[in-house]
Image (tube, rainbow, N blue to C red; front, side, top):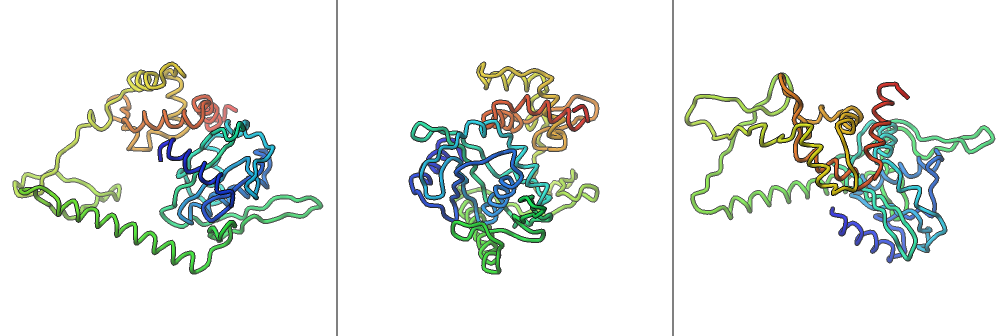
Length: 312
């Protein structure tokens, strides 16, 4: 979702003034509080399992504007959210976006959550200390949370049924769109059905080069097309798109590579056997997106890289 559409969606959720299965208000949030983090994680997972939604910070449960200053949340790193969710679910959830905005003269902060492809299950309990030697459980291991109206609660058979039906409908829609493309193809077009082939080493679909003139036509795409950038060119392209707002260098790219294991992501990077790593346009887009979400992204990547190497 682009930034304009996201802002419009959030403004609509604020004007509505009522929490729902797709909207949750947080009057305040203390990033140093384990209890508050666990409640936010529970809501994030519940929204993802329920088809998506938005959490808006700085708005009270009754829809009124609170006194909480959301400015501090603007420094929140998306990787922090991903890491905390992974700790309790063993799943890397990247399907969310941060939104910083001003509403009626006050800064607000929101997290828009996208639908999960498969239900996210908590594999560890979320417990926190409430004093007096007692603990409270935000969620238990083995539970799958969904939104029930304005609450995030353990799912039931109806929730799972609706999740499956929604996924089937999305697959059906994708198939139908593919059929429409075939039907509307211009005269003379050919549709080729190719058997699935599996690489015995990686387990992924593979393309095998043959001399058979009757074999289905496949075009071998050059690495120059899929990953056109070397590191020096990545730096130049990112700096060009940032337009002077931020200037990065090779050290920034090195920290990002180490912090986020970029070379394990084929869509972003391709490590050539006898040459330097090549990068895709998608990597450039990802770097710009991360910077837009977090102005300190590159500095945070440096700290994250040093932490992984045990330097801090």
